[in-house]
Amino acid sequence: MAPTRDRRPGFSRRAQYSLFLTYILAIAGAGVGAVLLALSTFNPPAFAALRATVREVTTPVSSGISAVFGVVSGVPDAIGSYFHVRTENEALRAEVKRTRAALTQAQIIVRDNRRLRGLLKLRDGDAAPVVTARIVSSSASSTRRYGVLNAGSWQGVREGQPVRGPDGLLGRIVETGPNTARVLLLTDPDSIVPVRRIGDGMPALAAGRGDGMVDIRSVDTGDAKLRPGDRFVTSGTGGIYAPGVLVARVVRAGSDTAPAQPYARPDTFDFALVSAAFVPPPPPARPQPPKTRR
Image (tube, rainbow, N blue to C red):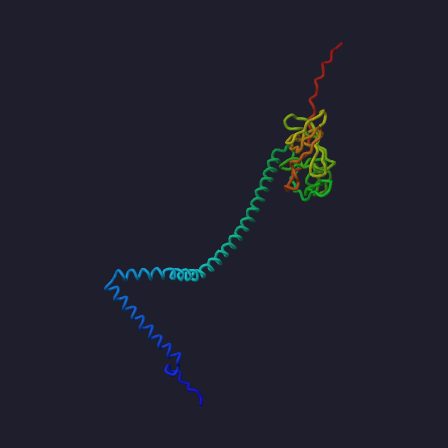
């Protein structure tokens, strides 16, 4: 015979036990409530002591449960804060990158303005400027040091004319075309420039070394002492370079000869000034004694 499908409490021992236990707990709860009510009414001090004891027992449990709920409830906020902070960091990184690019561009503009102002000041002070030209290339990987200007014979450029920038002497023109000119740079081994030391006027020669430096060689002076920081300018001797143009600064002490760093470097600016060759004024004529008549 098939078992009955009726699942009422009366036909299940487990359901009967559960129902019975529920009744017992309800009766016990009602009894405890009645006892506590009577105790709070007829003996308040005892009820207060009991309440304090229960509070001491339940407070740690309540605190733990509250902490757990606080952590759990704070998880969504923490996740939201994480993504918000990450978004802000990415925005700040992008802003820093844009600011760095703008700062670099501003530095380039400031440097170019400084060079152009120096070149304009140099042109205003030059008695015989020929043309201001752009340096389109310069050699730096070989022992020969040349530069190329985008101005030539059609712009009045001639061989032998000196070339300088805002910081000092660059070299001289050695070859010209219609719209280009070749410059023998100050650091080339074939370049020799008459110079003098600022301060005492000691004469010397600035000879190119082919490595971006020049050698300062004293002339007509026995046992000349060259010290680091000594500055040399063109002397005007030879009729090519006008006097007073910065040439180089000594970097290491020497006797009669010392290495020096040129002030002007063609790889640090774009424009150069070509000037007419300097021709020193002829010495004043000596007065001739009057001829006596016999």
